[in-house]
Length: 283
Image (cartoon, rainbow, N blue to C red):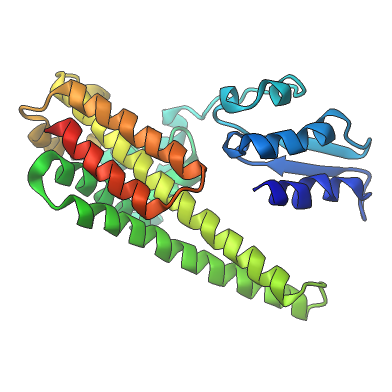
């Protein structure tokens, strides 16, 4: 990660733009950078060339080092209201979604229309099923290992598809005259595949956390605030005799695992450990 920041931002920022008067660098999920990467970026952020603009995107700005945050001008963005996401989804008839499913995905997407659309696609629906399956299994009604392994396989498949698509696109650019070495293409394709795999796995865990959150709400007689409102029957069945505190603890365990994945730990080991911890929490 440190080398990627140095190569793609710090060194690149020293070169004047080929076209136009400015160069703009956007760092997504800036909170995922380790301290070493943030410290490496500090000098460039503090004294950028006059033609450079640096934009750090973060959903958790408190996770940034104070030295980084103090040198930035914060701009807050409010998520789209649920009603706006629902309206956008209802305008797309290709998903064939019913009103309840649209309402659920609008809430699960946290204001992200693109994410909501993904959840209405076949891969998105499959990921929701796998997230629910993980919860069902860890509550003692299934095989936990097969549940998280299914989620991991889906993420790996998506990563392989992204890697292949990126390699094909870069090779086409090379054939068109863009200067790129075979190693550059291979490295960029691997990064795209790894990023897609991690993103899908993180989304699966987000959906699993949302399911446990809804179980806690349902067990507390507050099913009306559930995100997964198209699956209330399943939630009510699973919430019977469930301690809401156990469900809330499960949410914390899942969120902790999501943070661990940001540190490039073994995804397989992290998910296996999570399943054991969830089973203990619900026993």
